[in-house]
Image (cartoon, rainbow, N blue to C red; front, side, top):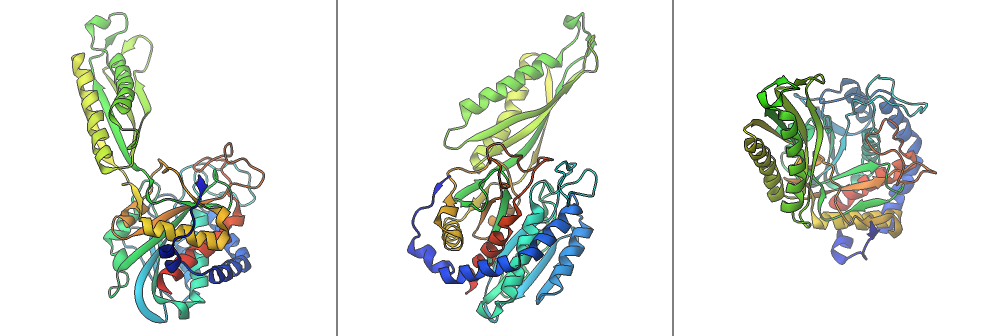
Length: 416
């Protein structure tokens, strides 16, 4: 990461002024105990996937105390809240994901998960607590809002396409007379310096695709490979050929990551199996590279196998698209974070993260941005600390007021 450039006039006109954001930060800090308590309650009771009844109930309980119009999803446990300002105007969306991961927690925290095999290992509990904290700040400032704020609380971010379900159920038309015209999301990372906000224009996170290849051979006795059609060396050759394909076909300025993450064949030492199976992921930053890599895996696997007289079965499951930040909104995030936290804590991310996010679906429809908030625990080195998705990950709760205030400031800047 590198220091942010000086604030341009266009960004300045869209960002809340310095005095305004500082009052938001002070209010968020005054409300910190409530935000932390909510985060810990969510952390103790994680739920995985698209159906999160307990989490949804907690969110609805929090929203019940606010002047928010609430609807819940029909196909998932999603929650949409609409906070109307004192005057008509556009609609701005703030998003938090609610689901956990199928990971058994080993942090030893006093508020560790009480659900075996489930853990908020990606910080979604912090996201929900920050968004609901921002909702409280915005509710207190309705007179300053010309328009509406949509609170998007989604399940199923961890590979279940929760945002897509919400879009299909009319998320962007939650206010029919003023469809959503801008959006913002914030994601915490334990491996980034605590309290530092990073954002960039263009690709912020990658597209993700899942592929599977089965090499079909003919089994036999391990002592007589000539009488069989061994799929194991063919599978090994495919793995190596795929690595070469990436380095020979993907331009360095339009990169791709291709990982073979699972390879299995056979059951014992003296039997040649009749098939070998492999699967992995492709991560890309453009639609063109994405299509090229998916087609490339199919082509390489098919032709390497054919060279040995074997065939393959290929399957592709499309994952999330590229998360693309609008350049103007990204600059507004940077300027707002600088006014809120200081210029040293608002940085321009030099490169995208090759992880994937289903907030990308929202950004395909409206200009917006996803930013990262560092939450490395005190006394830890971001380079070596347990990262997101680890069973040992710990997040610095001191950043919660920063996230609350940044959410509120983005909405106020869009609607003031």
